[in-house]
Length: 149
Image (cartoon, rainbow, N blue to C red; front, side, top):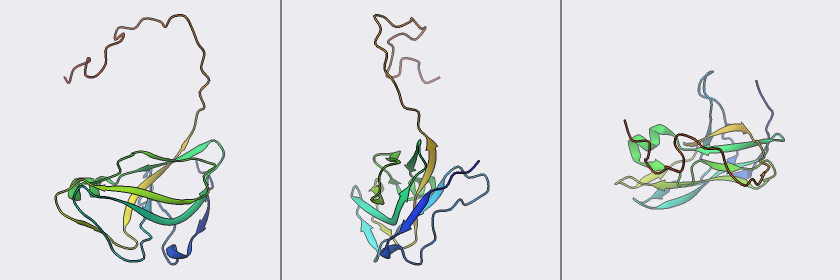
């Protein structure tokens, strides 16, 4: 199954490839950093990393922006609002909020695979107010009430 994402490449993304899937079975496509010069993020620091892309997503879809597991494991690079959401009606540049949760400075280089994106369908909710909800075995238990084993 496929869907078309219309894309405009901004000048600072010139010559960078468009997002792509690393393998035939990949669920997410890689987003590249369109920085014009290296960007160093100190430990516990945050930065907004441009992708140089503006997109028009298919109706009824969102783009979920997620961290890359290798960057998280090896360098502590995470996305603090993960998953970030790009709404179908947003037309500005797609940018990624990056947090360095590691112990060393991390440098973002031009063309680096900085995040990944999943095109996902959106189901819009309609609320129905009722007097009572049905009972379940769990009930109101939360915050670890089901245990860890």
